[in-house]
Length: 617
Ligand code: CO
Image 1 (spheres, rainbow, N blue to C red):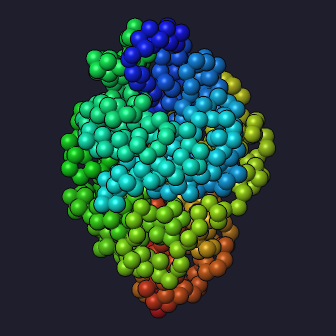
Image 2 (image 1 turned 120 degrees about the vertical axis):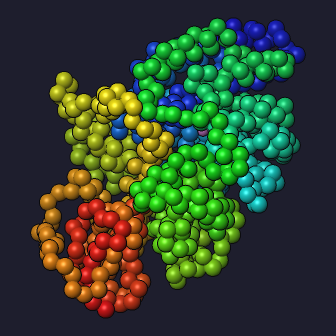
Image 3 (image 1 turned 60 degrees about the vertical axis):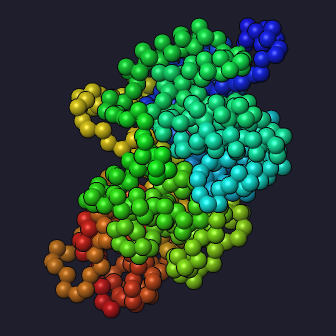
């Protein structure tokens, strides 16, 4: 840094452009299924710290989750260790506003404490975003960052729709400025921003907002390098890049190329070319060990230029349709998706809205529009994720809500404080520090799995999942590429998170505990639940599985326990649940009925058309 500073002073006339390095977060999330380990980072951290970056993005939802789930590492410890080496360059993280690092809204006490501990452990810059661009979902996080001495970067999730105009984006940035944001990021998560759009939006921001502007994009569509240049010429002061071997494809633009471009334009990047080359050599070598063997990607996904749907989302849709034996309907889903998104008021497509809109589109194609609605879609329409950018399709909303009233307040206002309850849920012998309680709040099952692993005596611990995974991958190196791994992981996590959401808003209709039982780990059936459904064929009418998935009983009407035989269910009441594509589909009674018997065990896999419940009307 010292060298860089002297250099920049010597060249006073040169305008400064700064670069944030995403290699330690977004780049390996986009390319290596988030499998970069703490030791991998520490071995190069000193050089990275000395290179002259504006900041080092090194923490976010997937990194935190994968640390515990696959690497058996404590993400907090990773942060402390990086901070221990990187003393010159600020550390940066991606924070999903009220969702923190998860997929649901957390109570304010959890948000505030998470931010406090992150600051305490060395985080400097918080890029705070909300999938809906709803300022109310950013407020608590931004205030907390300011309170604990961090840099609060507000964020515009960039998307294209009739309501996403420069004026609206600028107005949103001004709201964040008023909340105390220190800078504004344009987050082009799908890599769909054109150079012209960057010029217009950055110019608009620079005129109206007194905050530095930073741009984040992905190389998915191939436009990001040109877009960065236009954005910087229009006044952006910082862009996100990854070291070249960790760049491009669905990752960020390459640092070295951008440095060359900016320097030729007369900008001073302050970056040390020699160190960049050394850092790149390190990651090129590491790639042999860490890059997934089965990943085959196109360098540019030109389809994105047409349909503007993020690449990861399409691979999800493909695998969801595949699970349903309906891969041939992908073109219809691609056509349906923009329509569903319009009905939902044009949310930007980023976790969790990308999953909600994506899966609802699949259901709309498979069963007819809004014939089958996920609980998450219903929650969305109720306003539990925040306010949509545009009004929802009123007819669709009315049908989905079926008489229920949408909320008008900030979603988190409905939540009771969460830390105390979480602390009581974890066996105290598993907790070492307060940070463990936060880890548990965000990823309950994953954190508990990690805590239990950690509690085993050293030397007797189970193998690390990521190591096992590598052995398997090496063994079947020829296996076909599946969905983008990090997206699959997001989905794997989202099921569990959504269970909690259902618990929050389901009005007692769903037995959360029962649902949380994973089929693979299902304990012996409870005494009152009939262990075996009779093998004989049903004689009366049946409710059949509308899609392939996992069967669950609903909770009885207004009761916490599972539905049982003999229960009477009113028209519109939930008879049972089929979990498919990681989301929970309540199967509703079309008219009043009595449950005669369950034909499938709670937690068992079912195939489309399979009789689930025998009923009497
Ligand atoms: Co990104």
